[in-house]
Image (cartoon, rainbow, N blue to C red; front, side, top):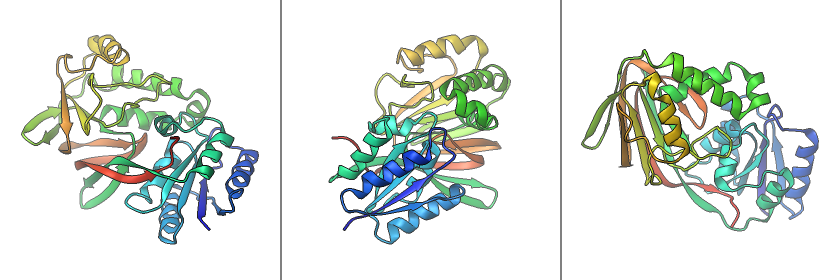
Length: 307
């Protein structure tokens, strides 16, 4: 009998007790041994996923938003346990990326009926600040600088985040771009193989869905990343913001923007920041970073997706 562990976030914007009971009922129909866990913070969420995988769970289901999925996935990277997703968050980018149905009942049936799992590539981030080194994994996006600043500011207004979702992130992004970064001088040294640059912000794309702006996927280069595409932003000028937005929405790429470089085909990226720069992974703030290594990790996470 397969063992399934459901890790739920009851404060997710679209979570209800009725939806949780419905998911539990659907998962139990195939005679699974189904357990429900209610972690109280990100650390306990990852710990619950680690324990579930180590104790033989075949599927660990994250019921929540992108933050919940991100933290559950941290405990499943490199294990035999598969990640299932029940999207009840604000933006649900990871669910869109995997093709998971929006409706809770359909997402639960997908998890319940899945007999095969897909292997997904992720990125491994090794971060250092002072004497502290931490390791994180990103499922759809990571970066240092402007996108991390957007995440930090958006999280400071949780009510707007839950109520307005993508509009709140868009408003925050424009505010940061207009008032936060134009005066910032390059302080991040970044390198990948023989390529080297100075930047105020570095974004790493390894999925087409790199957005909190509704259904519009954003690309920093016309072609899909293989495996990673890196945007090195030396400076951000206010007068160029309309062109940047247009290029993103039309998928024209940002390589032609002055003071922007797009590096394609990247497998490993190193950066050093002085002063430290903010980092983010999957929309989760990672704090200040003095140095980092970002590595592509192929086939590192088992996931449940539609055929």
